[in-house]
Image (cartoon, rainbow, N blue to C red; front, side, top):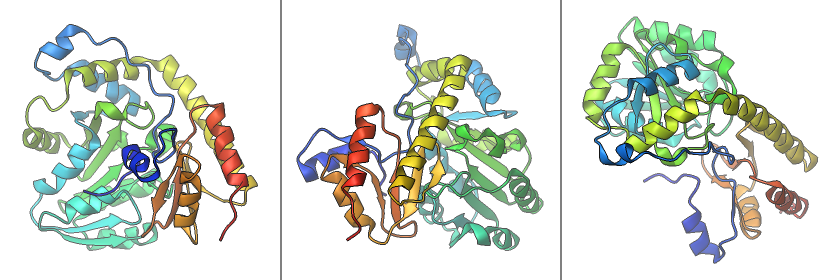
Amino acid sequence: MLEHGGNLRAAALRYGRDDWIDLSTGINPWGYPAPVIPADAWHRLPEPDPALAAAACAWYGAPRLLPVAGTQAAIQALPRLRPPSRVTVSAPSYAEHAHHWGRHGHRLRLASYEELDAAVEDSDVVVLCNPNNPTGAVVPPRQLLDWAARLGARGGWLVVDEAFGDTAPGLSVAGSSAQPGLIVLRSVGKFFGLAGLRLGFVGAHPALQDELADLLGPWAVSGPAQTVALAALHDTAWQALTQTRLQTAGERMRALLRVHGIEANGTPLFHWWQAARPEAFHEHLASRGIWCRLFTHAARGIRLGLPANEDEWQRLARALEEWSEP
């Protein structure tokens, strides 16, 4: 199993403390306040609620969406829906994509974002995150739609993971996801701060959505998850306030890092930068009860999520003041 952020139990065991500030994920620290779950959501089999898909289509601007048990479920399933193919996955990026495409007989290669345009010509499938996790790199929608059309014309796919796209809706290609060749993944875990629901959506051509639904099987999304997500997706006032709050917090984080000589990239939800010795920085923060995301390979560097309150902001500021490059 690949390593991810949010592994506070491992941090507690390693450092023997329980007062952690968890900045290791890009999840909104001010998540949507979940409503009371009605008894039916617990006791009935969770048949799909058309209202949930409709609400998701309205929020993401998509013509048709398939609810899934987190986009991770789709990431693991999509490679099983194709015969052996030439697959290019952007790198550095969310490692689960390459991991699962590499497990099902496909010919996998990794390519930088600068190499993706050329890779479209000799690939059957191209996979990328937009915005990218962890680097924050972006590809303009016009370019993505061109790639999708070129791939789709010969039966190929462009898979665009927009898990962090809620704070940059102008980048989304979800509105075009019904066209052959384009698959878009969306998640309620990041912007809505509801990672524990394990709920995401897949936009794709209807025939491919049906294949994916058959593979994932019945009752793919729990009743409580459907109930909470439906409330969150309908709450336009909370969404608007959260957009503003996250933009402000993201600007504050970027400014704080810049004061300490760190030029970071990312989204309002996370910031990432390359570091000569990221292990030392990670250890420095961990010794002060701050858990960040350490990348030691392709995206060698550090990623920080957002503090949840003023005390956490101040603890992070003090830790940055005490840091000096070894």
